[in-house]
Length: 416
Image (cartoon, rainbow, N blue to C red; front, side, top):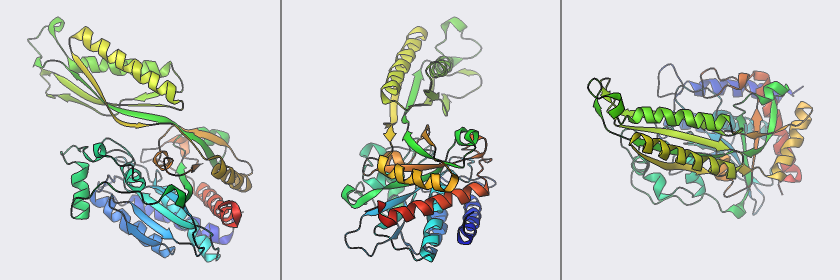
């Protein structure tokens, strides 16, 4: 049974998650995209909770919210905890948010217990992870780690606004690409709590599990270009229909993934031009998201899809292009941090369980500068990126107890 202070903190955590879900750019839904008005309000609200937990709060030049609890130990390293505060459109209330608010709750509990840490703590609320506004994810964590590139800030949203323009508006002037917030030698690691976004833990009857690795991911913008024409006067045999070619490609991608488990391939956004009911589409752009735990097999699938696309284009008298907008290798979680986390999971729920993540997370980017570890929390029906996304209050309490135990173990010596 959790202690009284943990039970109370879990209740506060659940209430805060509900309150944050109401901070949105869209009435009747939870929608917060990179640097939107709702993201500014979310940072202000979560910053207030960080201060209540005794953290010193600031925002960096890309809009990341940072709450820091410095150690009294001279030369202490820093342990990073966090996730993202942006959402997909019409999102659930736990994806990303749980990984920011739960560490705040855990620190509040430990501060009340007067626990002193031999390392500093930072809770991070990343400004962008989902890739909704600019079709490329991790802009927040890239900024924090100093891995944001010129190609990233040239990306444009649907209104033609570049990332560089949005950052200039945020800061009041244009800035150079951000430097890393820390040297790697200053960091102990990064730990992220996240809903599983899948059905495995629920099937196992477990509230939580430790992540072994994060699948590699490539996101591309694919374009077929043919020739627009009159829908009533152009014979079928003489058409160069870019949308028909795209449909053939999309079904081929689905077939490839179905026959190459655990490969997954998704087309989530498509736009046909000129987009008129009585005109044959002359060009079509769509996104392709390909993921696999093994980088070699992911790259092999991408080559096959390129070959398929070129073949379809040649057969139909079209042109084909594919531009990579995001590419991340698979990430193996830290053996040392994960071992400590697994002990906490085993203590709280009776046994530990390890599973890979098919979804991408900010840990992918943080792994470039420090060891990473992740805790997955059970979500109902494995549903995510949906308003019905749900975590049982009891599981919230379990995850909080695990985090408090993990931080206690780290404070007692594992983090030295």
